[in-house]
Image (cartoon, rainbow, N blue to C red; front, top):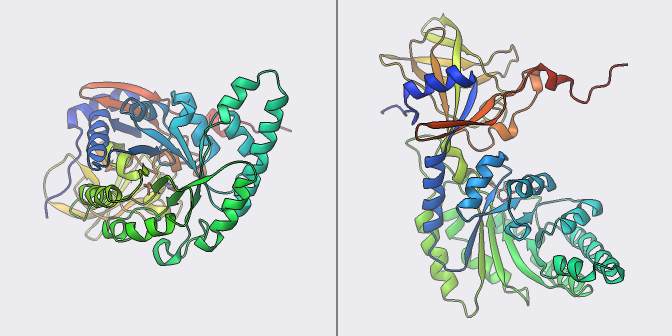
Length: 411
Ligand SMILES: Cc1ncc(COP(=O)(O)O)c(C=O)c1O
């Protein structure tokens, strides 16, 4: 089986490390734009809008690429929305599909001008409607009545679906037998429940897990008398095993287009890809700081850690690790620069004999990479660089030890 390769040339990797140091998250702008373009073209249905799930990556420079390509944002949290607004997205291009906001947070989202809300429970809907009504009442009394009312006039309210036969055993969502109650709650404040949101977990490369359930979702959505939009979010997979199965965007796109075009009404479609859009454009470059052998196994120590990239070790995910060296491959563990027992960036990898100073590339780290990094183990986080052909620019500074003291109070 041929080894995966890093799409960054060795001389470029050396050059950018000499400038920005390692470890370093490197995003390739051209790969990101190609992926966005491919996903966008895969769904011919004319009333489709794509919203990048920024839970996977909140770097503002990357969010701006999505904005420039015409995508909106799917926000999981108010923090996602804050970042998207800072990146320049207009509020109506941000779809909130999340869980468990307080009334204060809902009020903040309305104040920020967010218009689409896919809610997770009747209780959340009730809180939302109360907040919406009290803002509406306040606005009626206020001098800036027109401006403020204008801000909240076009609310699109959706329910996140919980239907175990297709959503599995999930904590998320509202059961169809609760729809009538939801509609009644919304009507009291003159709102309609017009959307249904389908969440398929995360990282699904089995395209059929989506295509086989489209009819059932539509049948369920029809239970909402004012149904106007469908939102698919979470789960479009990415082939981290480079010879593995990939989510088939074209077949999903054609299938959903055929089905929606046959409906007797125009339904808007929202798609919220996360990892599928961003995973493949990024590489974490690190350098070898230690090599030892345990019988036939090579044990490499690198200058990054599972706290910089937690997915492989903490969450059991797989990320391919490659080097630019040639020669016979050996069974290799790639270990982080701490003594934490789970500090493995990769176990049982196939790598050539490496030496101190060699660069290794951890591939496909754009999603849930930097976004899930932490200060666990008290290692400051790496810098992030955007590489566009041969041009590179820093898009997030490397942290230093000061970050470990941030907000601490000396007594
Ligand atoms: C509602 C929703 N949409 C989209 C996503 C993105 O998921 P993925 O990266 O699997 O596409 C998530 C992830 O948590 C989510 O909760």
